[in-house]
Image (cartoon, helix red, strand yellow):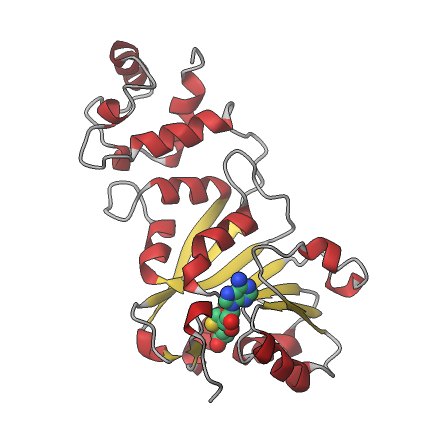
Length: 271
Ligand code: SAH
């Protein structure tokens, strides 16, 4: 077994069942160009390579990279990029590798400590959605975060992250993954989630405004929405607005659907 480095969030997936679930969720085609984040020992990479046109895989750990070059170096639809996924300028690194450019899918068992940064790099933000080519992004991640991504209004997991990510992508829970599916087992359980970036053809009128609204709206989850955002919108006006949008004036942030957030943001143009 390859030794693991804690600071890189290294937990090797050790379950054929989960590998099958990840690969099935990605609906691989022979023309796909895959981006993988965190190659590790290459257990997932090995499954992807025979199915697709190209796999470009990013791994930060130099020692692992040396081993990976020995393992997969001869395979001509494999390209390894050594470095920190968050900081790498992948399109420019792929300039001389046409076969690997513009990956159309992401499939990865990611390091949990940088999940937020990975999501932001892949999807962008409400203010600046990422311009990419991804049809789908299948990620194995910490259960608690995955549950927030797929959460529906009115549930405990539904929060600012749910609204932000669901604005950018449709989110689907694929399966639960117990800690024992890894070596060494992480302290938390995991899930596989599939995100399909939306083509935002009608972006919200003022993206910055929606971002602020969501952030403040969820700032204190026990308070009613109107109390959380009263610094933003005058209470009387808000009451009229909520009525117009058929949102209960007593609602908490967790009761508002994505559509409600967008409508609310679009309709207080005065500010
Ligand atoms: N895909 C493998 C490994 C998952 S563990 C498997 O399923 O077994 C996460 C991997 O991400 C580790 O190999 C770790 O070294 C790598 N990693 C951690 N931080 C990274 C970063 N910033 N950029 C690229 N890879 C990173």
